[in-house]
Length: 45
Ligand SMILES: [Zn+2]
Figure (cartoon, rainbow, N blue to C red):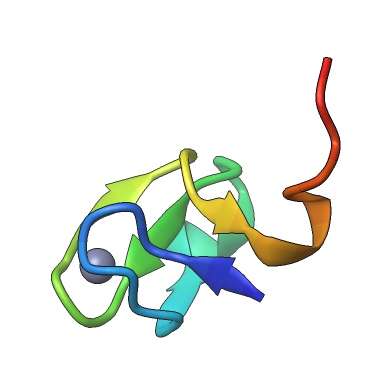
């Protein structure tokens, strides 16, 4: 589950079909590669 950093919405879609590795939030319009992933949250470097 990916979560928008801006509005915390899970209504994200791949931007341009994902060819740029970016996501677009359908809720607030945010586009970027920085999104929260609930399932990888526990991994730390
Ligand atoms: Zn958003």
